[in-house]
Amino acid sequence: MRSTVALLLTGTMMLGCFPHDAHKRTLAQFAEGGAVVSGIALEAILSTGADCDAMAKIGAPPDSSCHTKSTVLGDLGVALILGGLLGFVATISTAEEAKAPPPIDIKAQAPAAKPDLKLPPGVKGNTEATAPAATSEATTPAADTTPAASAH
Image (cartoon, rainbow, N blue to C red; front, side):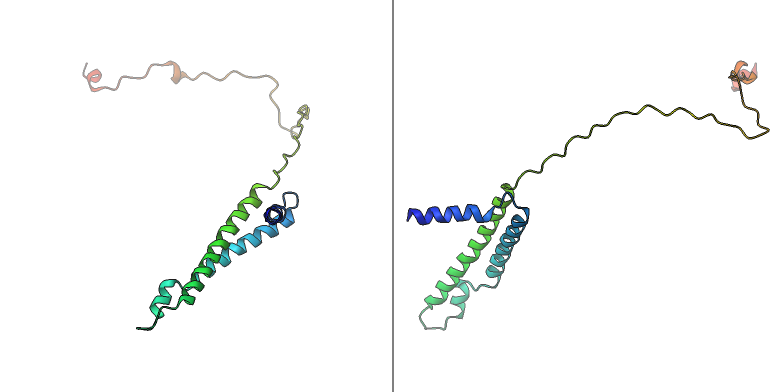
C-alpha cells in the first residue's frame, strides 16, 4: 500500500510540473485546461438525482442505478475540475524564474565639436553681441485714466 502511494506521488510530481522544459510545461498546461473544460462540460450535460426522480413512473420503485450513475459522474466532473486547477497551479508555481538580462553599461560620449557655419554670400553676420534696445514707453509713467483724476 505504501509503495503504491509513493509511486502515485512520485509520478504526479514528475509528470505534472516540468520546471526545466518550457515546451512540456506548455503541453501540461493545455492538458490541465482540457481537464477543467471537460469537467465543466460533464457537469453541464449530466442529469442529476432530481432528474432521475422526475423521470420515475408513478407507483414504480425509484431507480437506484440512475442515482448511482449521476452521483459517480458528478463526482468525476468535480474531480476533473479540481485536478485540472490544482495541476495548473502546480505547473505555474514550479516554473523557473526568468533570468534577468545582464545590465548594459552605457558610457557617455564627448559632444561633437560644432562645425563652422558659413553664411550665404551677401549676408553679414553679427560679430559682437548687442544689448537689447530700451523703449521710451517702458520708462514713462502711464497716464491716469480714472474718472476722479480727470475731474480735477
